[in-house]
Image (cartoon, rainbow, N blue to C red):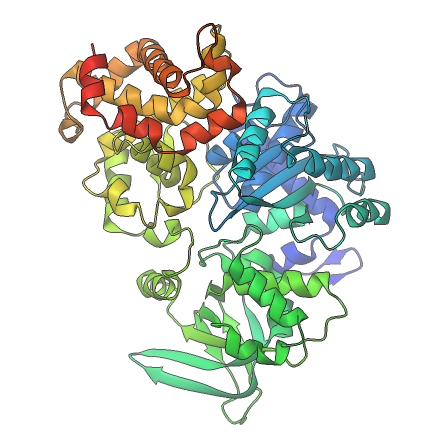
Length: 589
């Protein structure tokens, strides 16, 4: 209990800790985040080495915020950072692969205040700049001065727009202070009004702290509406009934995405499901919402209620998690928050609550998969306990590496997140770099077996080593202007070519790469990596020259970035060389 400046903790348990985080004074939250930033900087000196202390903290705060908002590993989030001079008004960008004629883009603008005692609003001029950024970069006809990282992002966005995809933009204003003021809100409102393609979100220290603390159990209660059913079967208990959507919104406001930790989260902007939920509530059909929606599935360690009460139960829940219906919950929260006068008192949603033992992860995984597998979602967390993933973790450890089956904030070079491993293997050994780059959400779904079947730790680690080195080369400036023109888009393809050449030089195939020759293969790559990448880039440059056929006296450096991005997004280059045995026979030494 908090009384004045005196804090009395009679019983300190995880629930109380979680509630303290929620009610924690903002300046304490800032200090916790500041300490987290310090640890990240100490763990990754190379990433922040060229900046002064203040700049390092600002950059690290941006990285942590992007990682928290997108629910991605810190290592993966580094690739989304564009911050620097002439960054175009955004510090980081995430482009979700295009589908159904649309592409979701998340942009970030970050402001870090070094004086933790100040509670400043997100600057109005920064919001105004963000508004102008959206107007600029999503218009392919508009020219703007950009740094290298930002230019490649904008070229890729505009390439998709020119291919007919409609962009839906979320601009995240990230800071360790308060939300923007009314003046800034007017900039947004005057520029976009009720425009559905653009929305602005504030993401602050409390949101980041909630992400860091998201593994704390949630003990709460939910008010059922009307009659509900409680059944016992197969040594498990379940409650099925209806709940007012305002009750779901209350839970989301109180606990946020912490409720969705076990859920396969996928909420990045606009899609048909989110649209239909919002439209139903705003079109005067809220009373029919119960019949239109598939409902929400929850699991908990234990539930209790007054069984002597006929209806309107208040169900107490220990260890609550939402494992299906995350999109519904997030959309309900957004729709109600953005439409304060909307009357949804007659709107209900079907809720299923399963009481499952806290240590029975397998049944939770099966329920989650059964209720989610038809949705276009990221299945990484579901697959994390597969025997294949567990075996890779154990085998990688024997080779001196740590394989992370689940999301993690570690960034050491010896740590390999499963997402990075999937990208590397799909790019290199499966010869599908175009899919690895543009179909990331399907790696633990439709492409899972293609990537992980018959994969051993040695093959996985070598692929990651190649992949990471090629990505590092991507960030360097080459003397050859043609190489510079393609580097931002070609690293997945180059890594594939390097992997194939590596095996050729060692006279082995990928199936022969095991723990017995791992050190030999790794040592050869470390000695020859500069030459291998140089060879691959030259060969790929030749392929592009034939592909674009720029004409005599012209070079691929003159090819528009949007056209270059489109070329690497399609199958043409893959079929012409990477999967063309005749091409390899002609080009391998």
